[in-house]
Length: 496
Image 1 (spheres, helix red, strand yellow):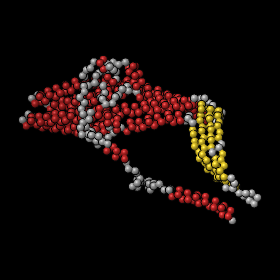
Image 2: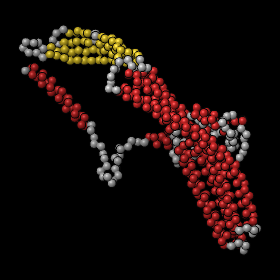
Image 3: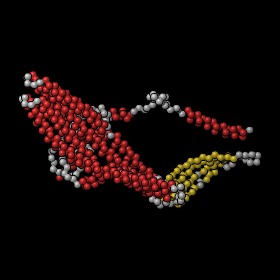
Image 4: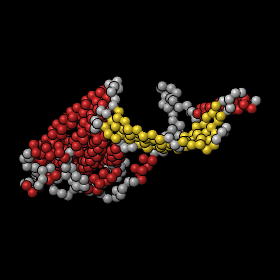
């Protein structure tokens, strides 16, 4: 009877544990809410989204914007706040751990083991019942001593090249942030100049309107002149409103480049530096070669290609023999309930084996062929990127030289339009010309101002993009021609 009770307890106890485990599992299951209708928006519960601490952090770390910021300060804020650069930095740090991870694959693996075994043997009328408990610690060691296919070195090299690629991508993200900040800064500067020019246009149009009214009051003009002057004045105010809207948009883009909310009251300090120097005729072959040697995005692709080449050797290494060491040692203590108590054993093993996979269903061969194809794809990606980079250097160089010429012609056009406008006004007041000539001169003057503002902005933007294309864009300063083809002293500086 006592044996039957023991057997029942041994059956009932595991069953009860199983039922309790299933109860806990089912209690933890919840049904996922789903939209009830295909034509009705889903109403989320109050706890559907966690608190957005990211946006709160953006709001709380807003810098001091009570004064106009220089380009150096704007660039510094962009680098410190930009999430893209911090993301690339985190990815670079994560990639650096892959080297240690790759090295760890080829270091000894030591595993500590603690084991407990309960055993027994049933009894009948002719056999005694035995019951024992075995327990004790143990250690296992596994170590790949050498792979004749060079897998250890190839894996470490692959990880190292991956780290290099991530680090160069981080450098490229920094240059992206600097370029975006500088372009946004010059966009605001240009938009401010456009507002000033549009304000001057409103003043000029108002002067023309007052002149037309004066002539009409004196009996020397006609009502049509006043109406046409009023139309020109309204058009000038329209242009001013448009320029003010563009300035607001430009400030929003600048705030975005600085990783600030778009409604941040960013003010910029107008640059006081002279116009950049005009570049001489450059050796484009040398300029392109230097650009390809400096650009971090190209360097990242080269490192990626090297990592793919190393991966070819990694995937092919299982085809070669590997020398392993395996060892273990345990201590097993025995407590018996129907005999001697306190026995123990200390088994140990030490094995040196040479393992060679003779056939694995063509898995290694297929993996190596895939790695070879990926390495070839990486090479062609690099080929394509280098061709695109060379074209980028050429185009940016020509755009900068074109911007310099356009600025020179725009400055000359503004001088001519200013003189023409003054002469037309004097002639109109003297009754020598009609209102149409004055309005035409007024329009021409407004266009000349706009052209000069755009041409000046294009110079700095084109030079920043040329510095970026050649891998020489630096933080904290505005673009200078000396970045591109030093030394600057060899140039003939000229104000366009």
